[in-house]
Structures are given as C-alpha cells and as structure tokens.
Length: 148
Picture 1 (tube, rainbow, N blue to C red):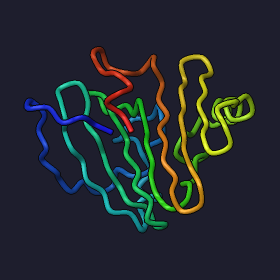
Picture 2: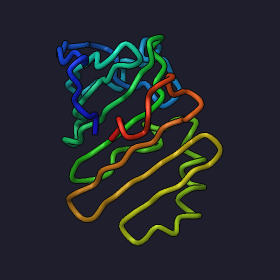
Picture 3: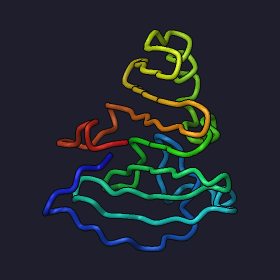
C-alpha cells in the first residue's frame, strides 16, 4: 500500500487509453484494446513515480506504478479473484511461474524472487492481493514498502 506523505499529490485524473501496459512496458505504448471494461485513474504520488489505477471487467483493482518516463516498474492487484497475471506481467510471467514453483511460503501465500523480479501474493476464496516489481527498474529512493 502506498503510504501517505505530506509532499505527495493526491490528484486523481481520468486517463483514457492507458490500460494494458505490463510490467516493464511504457504506459504510453500500451494497447488500448485491453481498456474495454476498465475504468482508469492516475495519481501522481511523487516526482519519482505515479500510480495508474484501474478496475477490470472482473471488478479487480489493478495498480501500475510507473517511473517519470512512464515505464511500469511494479504492478499490484486486489479483488475477489486473481487477474490475468500472464497479461499483467507480460515477459515476466515465466519468472512468476518459476517463483510459484519454488514457493515455500505456505498454502495461501506466495513470495519469490527470480533475478531482479520480486513477487508476493496472498489469497483465498474471495480475497486475493499481491504485487510484483522489478528492482532494476525501480526509481531511486522508491522502496517496496510503498507498493501494494
């Protein structure tokens, strides 16, 4: 979860056509085809990064964290079911599967790291949440504690 701070700007703007950017992609290069059924909001939370929030057709909240150039360095999700992680993670999906297979965190918990890719996920029937990020893409000064 993003922790509030007095210097963050919590101005929400409607941002059309940005859905579909996966981890590692630029938001402005995202396909608008994935935007069907989604409502999107962007929140510039600091000079280091901004958060784009959307609700997908399944009612899941998806957050994409992008650096100043628009490159998505982290994604987070929450909802009654898992989102399409293959679509959300893009080229990082094989690393996710590798982390999933090596998971020893427990039945309803997943924590893993493959290279600079980190993922954590919690879930049980009707309540899923998680985040994935690439430490190599994180802007200077941004910590995993600021993501959820």
